Amino acid sequence: MTCWQSLRERRRIIGSFPWTWRIVEHFRDIPATAISDMPDRIIAATAKATKTRLVTRDESIGKAAGVEVVW
Image (tube, rainbow, N blue to C red; front, side, top):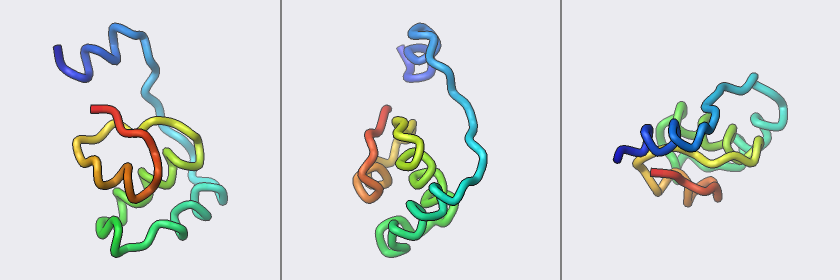
């Protein structure tokens, strides 16, 4: 069973979030040396700001941002 099948079976909603100042604040807290790719930092900051789990294969992103990773 793939991760996506598991999420679908649990009927979890995967969505998007608007860019907010709270996300910007978390984005600023994540150093570029920890997550060099800016889009990855934005995604990690969004997960941290919204207190959601991050779906990624790259566990280092979750560790650097302090968010739970699902994969």
